[in-house]
Image (cartoon, one colour):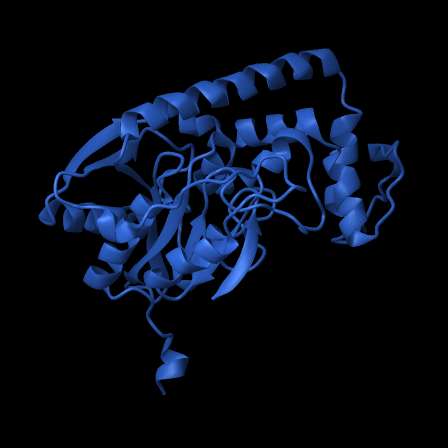
Length: 313
């Protein structure tokens, strides 16, 4: 197993691409003490530490070891972590998100979720479609929180050790666009900072943050003690560098960070193209054990982690 941090999918997306499990915990369950760089304000509430593992059965004991409040994290709390073994699948409400993404999932991703739903239905769960257009604004929620709470560019500078002038304009970018990979994202953020209509952006930020809170409350009430099945990414593992400049691709995972809902990435076997498939299982806050219970069931049905061919030889 391994540990990682997740502000928009950094646990679940690589786990999906590699055919393993990962869990984004409930807000406050695991303190993010010691994380570098440390976030602030509402962004810190959306930064989670969690486990990545080959087997679903390892997620719960690792969470038990990580959970508990710490004085350095104001969002951490003493929360009860339920036991997956006590969660019955018979009668469980399972929701399939619909109308919820700007990027429609590719066929292999959609089919993985359908297989997961069918397996749970055979186990006695009640499967229902749930329109969630609010999730289309996931990246808006994320960017609004970041813009309203922290100097993200300064944080990137701190990590990369890359100093970018505060007034970075298009005229200062060389014509041949020779910017290092380290400085390019920081320069883009600086340009965004100096954009006009800051007052308008501030109002928009407030509206998006409020909308995220309302969406979280609505989804939490609807799910109850059930789960929501949602694609972890619009497509299977992409070729290197092909996702640059497309932040909306992270909307499927970032939504749960900024809505404050726990989510488990579950591998669903190998696709005909030879790449891992998977499904994201989300639950109401405090119901981490419910999502993990579903992950354990799906692992038994689909076989879970599949060794790549190179390890079989």
